[in-house]
Image (tube, rainbow, N blue to C red; front, side, top):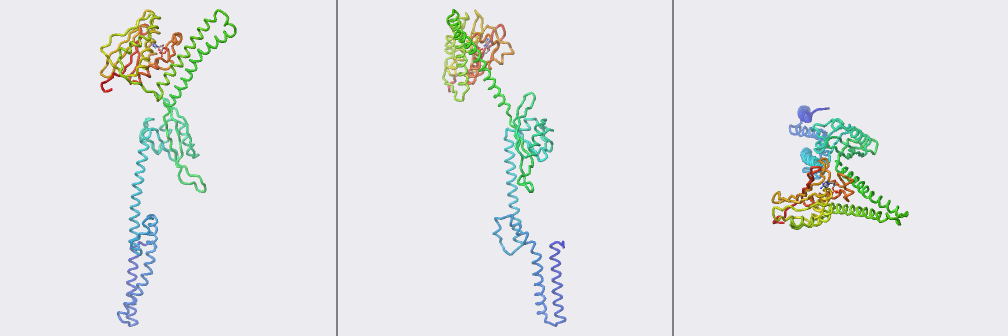
Amino acid sequence: MNLRFRSKLLALFLFLIILFASVQGYLLYFSKTSWILASFIGVLISGFIAFFFLRVLIRPIRRITELAFQFTPESKTEKVFPDDELVNLSKAIREMGNQLQKKIVEISQEKEYLQAVLRGMIEGVLVVDEKGRIRMINEALQDLFALPSDVADKFPLEVIRNAQLESTIREVVQEGRNLAFEMDVPGVDKKIFEVNIVPILGGPVAGSVDRKVSGAIAVFHDITRLKELEKIRQDFVANVSHELRTPLTTIKGYVETLLEGALKEEVAPQFLQIINRHTDRLTKIVEDLLALSRIESREFRLQLEGISLAELIDDALDFVKGAADRNKISISRADLPGPILIQGDRNHLEQVLTNLLDNAIKYGHEGGRVTVSAIETDQKEVRIAVQDDGMGIPKEDLHRIFERFYRVDKGRSKELGGTGLGLSIVKHIVQAHGGRVWATSEPGKGSTFHCTLPIKSETH
Ligand code: ADP
């Protein structure tokens, strides 16, 4: 019987009135009972039947109340009126409502945390459902691949054109295990990503201990810089080995020739001279490498002090004077605009100037000139220039000469005892002082190396 509760109550009420009237009428009419007794018996019988029917009617309410209290466990013991079903039911429902509200607040808070985490991540994140369709992406991924914002329900292949990404996501969803692969993204600024894909596990599969896979999350780490550094490191090791191998092979060759009998011949002193020269070269390479690694190390600290620029330049000129004289090159300092005090590390700045002067002499020509000058560009910075009138540097090599082991003319540099590391050391020291270094040149006419250094301020 699918009557509404209100109709059921109404029917019961009408039935009771009819029952009462019938019982009372019967007793008054047939048994000639007094009016009071007939009414009393009528009330008694109707009351008894009402009690029975109400119990039946109330039973579902009790069941609902019990059920509602199960969802609000903490209030189960606090029934206000233990026998009033409707008051308890309304209290249980109010409790349920409160807890539901609390849960909604908690869930939306958690959702916000999650979104803040996803927004804050530098890694790109892509979430797909069990069919492999996109559920969401974070802002980082959107930026990395310049994706539109409405990618929901599309397949990853439709928005990120990479077949391996699509197939790996499918594999993860089907097999429920983590997978990772490296993804190359060609283009103007070529990028490499490490993509880690993990399954999202839902409820258990019927009749098994396994859990259902309800989707997958792919995290994109940009490892372009890491790969570049790895390549630089590999190139560096290859370069160092190559640089060391050449003099070592020469030394070994001459030592073997001497051991095989040449020691007693006239050429022996000449061979020993060559061995000596190559040993010097090896020593210079190792010294320069050590200098570079010291400057690049985390522990590297400059010993800063106020240094007179004129004094610094003159000391460096004194240091290279012998080499300049041997090459018949005149070296000098142009007049400075006034006494300039720079804030720097004396030993390292001397190395900067001697390396630059050394090159100017090495790549200069007999009878040439090398001049060191300086101007204050503003209150904070001075710009030093080492100018020569030597062979110059082709335009296409200018931006590469500060790289380790980069030489314009390999043969000439080696012949002149160069290691290919001098300018790299210069660059690191100047940058450690907060300055910049660059070169300008006109092939055949000469080169100028410029570097900026901080002026010592009153507050230093
Ligand atoms: P190297 O030990 O070979 O001199 P550097 O790092 O000091 O190494 O210089 C790198 C390259 O830059 C040199 O091999 C040379 O080709 C070029 N170079 C540097 N200074 C000058 C200069 N003043 N004139 C012409 N070329 C220069």
